Image (cartoon, rainbow, N blue to C red; front, side, top):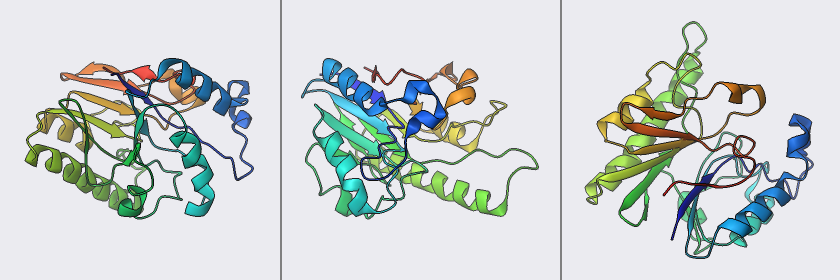
Length: 228
């Protein structure tokens, strides 16, 4: 059994949203993901997918993308991205497939680890933060704590967090998210969202005893990376 991670699948089987407009490496990217995934992941493995699953706007349109994920080997744990407008009731989502778990104010487990998470939001940048940004940022901090508290209450001490947005701003300054990670003694944090030129400067490696990993598809060459 292994634990792997990937994010930003940006599937679009029911809408016209070709990802190669963001570069040639995205050409037929779903085929690359499927091939790499199938060659590496077994039915006993677990894959964490940190958001931006589908371009679909409605749940009924996104079902084909979810079915595609369902048909890949292994168990999948999914958290929300900023483009996942199809995302509906968490209870409804978690009744769809036995092999897919969706995180929202809750947690799931992998061996002795609790897998927690939330979508997140861009951390504050002076003079570039609106009241709308602050509202979403505050809400996402609450959701992250709800997820972490549920794991701690259940007795878990080893914690991995999935978050879609980078946990720090472009100056790599400490944020409320990184403070929460330290408060709860989180071991590993994985995030995506960044693509193209933004991937030249990423926040990864060990910081304050926490390992940060970037899992954007184009950063890891559409190949799930092994976490444990």
